[in-house]
Image (cartoon, rainbow, N blue to C red; front, side, top):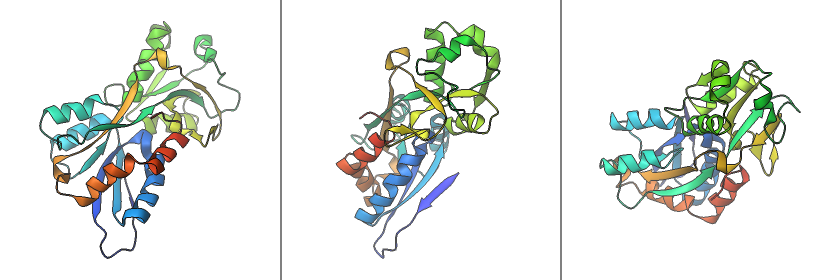
Length: 240
């Protein structure tokens, strides 16, 4: 799935960006300001970090990668697929247990232990870091074996969210950014999972080899490190 934002500028350059699905809304907001300020057009494709790794290794035309973890960009760096010195952590993600129903999820996540639901949605832990974090939470709470038969697995965090939003699962582990804006939930009910229940979700950005000579790619990385992007990122519940 691709999303493009354009600006009418004769001098505009274009940057192809692979964006982890959890960062969809923030990057759409950032893209507007980035293009207004620099004149460059951001063309974003959204999906799971694991799928993007495979696509990049197979020659996909991405110039910048905004991953949902730090391990995948580091691996690409070790394999010589990135511009040296360009990798940095642009956000630290927050995991949430969410239901589209108001009052369904309590603020301590006790609904998990109640085991009264039929389906729990998570993203594929092999491809999506938020899915991996979800499995770590279940393990820390001693609920893996009990809940395993009820898990509905999405290929990305977007699909995991859709299972819950459409009612195919009563609740699910999603990225807080999918259900949070400007300090409050956008709907339903949620438990913001404590950081100590899973490994940190450090999300790294990196310029890929195809973007080494791209002015727009360099400008985007610089913009992501600036105060305007930071304000948008924080507004969606990420840490910096």
